[in-house]
Image (cartoon, rainbow, N blue to C red; front, top):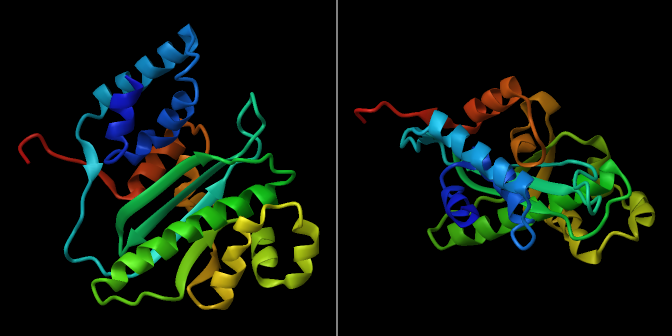
Length: 219
């Protein structure tokens, strides 16, 4: 059942976080996990025609959103990185992954998530170069002000030496003009759906601004 749901996340970003959490217990499932999986299936049954719509009238600007929870995994106390990338208003890529190390602050968790999002943005930029599209200075929207300080201010570097070196490359990418960090209100953070459990109103709102629509039966 988990394998089927993981396949479905390629077109249903609204279940990505739930499936990611359940996939962590594939080797040692319990009855609680089985009930949770069945709950996801009941949700899908209630929204069977929800999907992504790619309009040809949208622009072609590349942008990204990054977010993270803090110690959301009850067993390991590790945080979950979430991110999504857009071409115009078309959602083309999204991620939800448990971080490999335990973050000691919300700023560190958000910084690691931003680095993961930046890596995906750079990959998309290189792919678009094959089509003659040079989309540099790409904005990455983040709702944590401390991340801007770590990326832009070298003084903050001394406070983050314990963070793995592979995550600090986002600072070089920002200095080189590949990406730029942009602030966004937490209420408008689209990547929030990939990092934590949400109540129904919040989930429905994020589904709407992500670009998911419910298709008519006759379409």
